[in-house]
Length: 444
Image 1 (cartoon, rainbow, N blue to C red):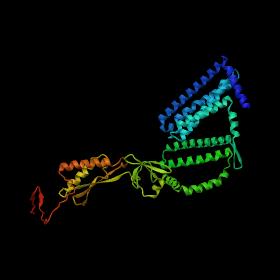
Image 2 (image 1 turned 180 degrees about the vertical axis):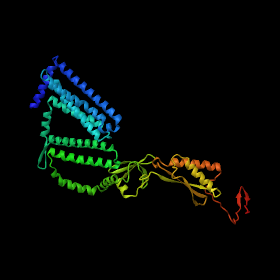
Image 3 (image 1 turned 45 degrees about the horizontal axis):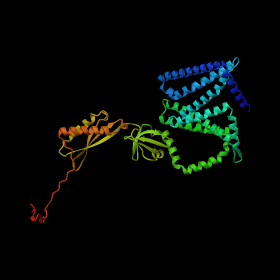
Image 4 (image 1 turned 30 degrees about the vertical axis):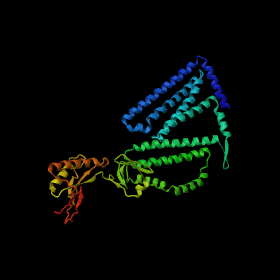
């Protein structure tokens, strides 16, 4: 009741100030504080841009856009508070008193959205959530200013219900939910900062960075819940029995999911598969573009992304073409006729491979006689490349085209299957009647 009277008195005094020309002093001071805050915000932005030129990873780590948005309301709040304390001795400061909760609400909104953007950098729902959160926050501030908020709180406290032996009302439930959300939000923000720092740390393997980042996020979330629940009045020991039963249920019903998560941490720790590796597992082949705790994404040469469960990668044979050495050998089969000069044909094969920029000179390309087939002699051209992630179809097509041109120039024949049918001792053919006459075919 006392807070309601104070807010009502503030509004009455502010209305009296509006009718007095001296209100321009308060308007001028408030405008000056906002201008100075804007200037500070621009200076911070310029400093961050200069730092970005020297160290591009710095701005990504601190979140330049979010920091700049937070600097303005915080600096304006500090300046208005100082101006209110200074001018209170000589002048009414009711307008400045009203500006303080508004600037505080703006700072809280921007800090919350900034923390969410740091925690979920690729979340598409943040834009709509920012508008919803800002609307709710401004409604609460408006209710507080007009003095209706205490009455709303009293109404929420009247809505109560029993939970076991405890009597819980809606206001306590909302407080608890808000407290847990704030602690988890702070934990996610800290996890985002830790992850940004880890990702830009030199000398640390990429897989270890992911492991440490995810472990820190999990630990911070558990710590946040452990702090938030006791603040609400919920005893964590009361949840031990429920947690044990839930753990048994999850262990029985979510074995595959749990196995994928464990396998994900194994892959990240043993570093057998890394980002950018070209691997084949089963019928899937592609470059590892993402490793999560549940699945791994392989991007094929056609652009199609395959989502492979981590359990499959741990339990199956995986061909990693870029595990320790990116060089791979490609075998290109070519068939020539039996009348071909094999030495000349093999020299043409080696020469055609050597003209390609992607073919390595060491080890050098080599041609081999592979087999004597039905229609011709099978040759094999073997060459090495050190960029298998770029695909092999292009280089194989270019070499085949060059071989076809050279074979055509040298008159070397590329055979195709042929069948010769001989008819021995054909039987006499019966007369065929056609158009009223008789036609007979005699064997020669």
